[in-house]
Amino acid sequence: MTQEVFGLRYEFVYRHGHYMVLYKEDGLDSKTLSTLQVRMLEANDVPNLLPLEIQEVDFRISLLYNLSAKRMLAHVLKVEELSKQHFAKLMYAIVCAVGESKNYMLFESGYVLKDNFIFIGSDWSDVYLTYVPLEPIDVEDSVFKSLESLMKQLSQKLNDDDRVVVVSWMETLSRNQSLQGFKENLLALMDEQPLVQEAFQISNHVDEHSTEIPLNMQLSPAKENGLPKPLWKRDEGQQQVRINTSIEELLQPNNVPKMNKEQGNPVSFIALSGRSRTIVLTAVILLIAFLWQNYFTYPSTGTLQITAGISILLMNVWFIIQFLGLPRFQRHAKGSTGVNLPIFPVAEKQLDLNQATPTPEPINIQNYYENLHKHTTLLNHKKPNATVFLGRLMNQPLGARIEWQTEGNTKTVPLNKDHFTMGRGDASLKVDYVLEEAGASRIHAEIMKNEEGYVIKDTGSTNGTYLNGEPLVTYQSYPLKDGDEIRIVRQEIKFRL
Image 1 (cartoon, rainbow, N blue to C red):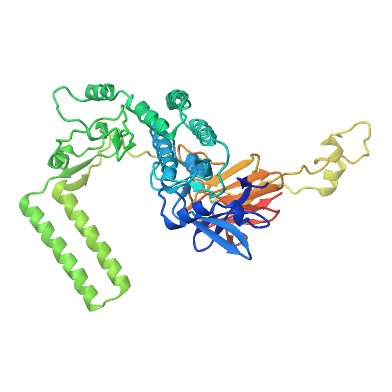
Image 2: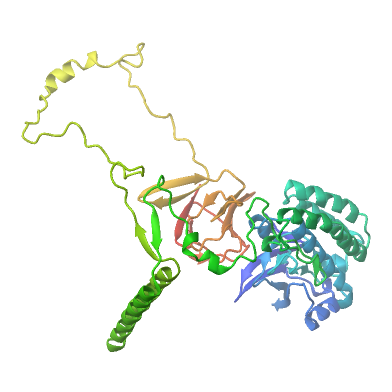
């Protein structure tokens, strides 16, 4: 399947960094490039644009965009939850970036406003757009159509409540025919959120006798650095913690929770006197000094690790005794109200070793086969002499699937989707194949079906994906054939057709 934008093919490569390449099979003609725009891009560090390099090899021109330390928006939407605040920050940053084009004599129609050409940095407002310096396209409202299409696509990633709000925003924003009006309307819509009602709701959660607001209920500024910022997340069912609670109160022995007798053996802490704590501290210091003296006498890496570990353990013991006391585990006497450990009854019938074990009677093979017809039933009474086939008539094709070995057994998962995702996943993100490997990303790789067959793509993972021992370039699609081996961290997976 050909991937094109503005009539140019694109793919992802690795050349001492991740790059996206736009090119033509017969080479990009220099006449199709805008000389003025190319010079402006080379002479200026335009903010919120992907760094562009013009490469010419054998009179063939291609455009290279540096993607290092950036994430594709299409894959960020799969991994992270999008809220209306994120939507507003993202769209505001995109409109501001497009609006800056006039300061560098760039054309608005040169921006590729699609989710797989927009990249995100550290924050939703930290966007990087793809700009193609071609001769201007004679479509005046193309940028607004692209923005409207992008907003519709983003709205599908919102939850139901936020989608209702964003759809109302889109109806207002679609009437704009200038980027400045688009930006002003977006800020005005954000300012319409009733912050006074938010503050009133927060006050209901605060004790009427307390004038302090819990930390997780405080409001952040509505706008910072010209960009709208979301409020702090709040959990209305969460118990609020007072700011004026002192650490000393939390560390008192009386505040240490003790186990209920109905739940098991209770644990209590005995508070030590000052003299006892001094004795314990002296003993801990002497032990630590003895350990380090032994290390300095016989220095080695192993001795250093053991000495440091035991020293930290002794210091932790001292702090527990200092603030909580000496732990004591109480056991209930038999007949008390506490719950004792379960006693498993011994089997009533035990094997008597002195008793002779009965031996089974020997089987007469000749009598067994002579009387076999009395114990079997013919499956087909019409043709008693015919051989009955008990299996399937033919093996059913399994289709595309992935296989892997675990504990000596082969496990298989069919590829019954056009987009089959593999990764760690989490509670809010479901993947088709869960990788229980340390180092696997939430969506690590993706197997897709197209007109030519199946392809695999690394979706911007941290530790990379390998196909037949070769590392995959991020976001680049690679064709799969039967027997290909895929490795993600330490998990080896085989592709089958």
